[in-house]
Length: 232
Image 1 (tube, rainbow, N blue to C red):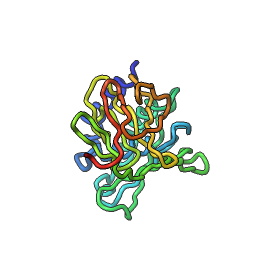
Image 2 (image 1 turned 120 degrees about the vertical axis):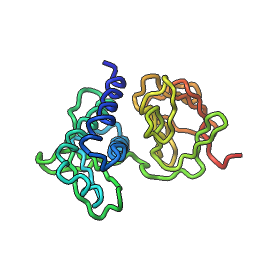
Image 3 (image 1 turned 90 degrees about the vertical axis):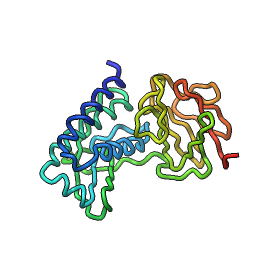
Image 4 (image 1 turned 60 degrees about the vertical axis):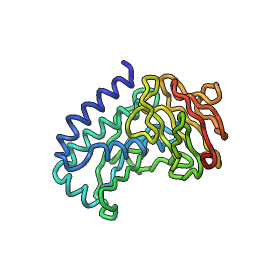
């Protein structure tokens, strides 16, 4: 079965039925799933997939989920499992999900921490983030025709799904296709095992490729330019 088609069907079921029903309108499901996606994207691809996700909720969100945390944890575990199997090879199991009350978090903020060991299996180890996670890329941008898209923060996600930083609505683009990251002080393009590949100056990206001003990118069949410096 095509993993992207499977994921799309799962996401449709979760977004349009299960999670909204479980949450009872208290939260937008995208708030939770977006936080999970960003946390998984920040795990280096050469590390094993997380066995557990610790999801911290502020006072407002925690009260909204009173009495429903177990049901929400189950649905989010299934969602995270689909995302994990999309990115990592093999058939890793669904990571366990634990919702935790964190009164210090402001408003409706959600914080997700991937963990290497599931609860109850011994000492828990937080997985290290992708190098450059959360760093700002001043003056970096992607040019799409006449449109310039600032790369405000790294990692910067590119794909067809609506929760990417740059959404490319084209059938050749995977839902979560590629990312810009910062490694050793330079910005690199990382292909997320996309179906149709990512290319830099005509060369297919095998893992990651360092970028320079003016590089021609191809995301599926969508052409971009990488820019460094102010827009002329």
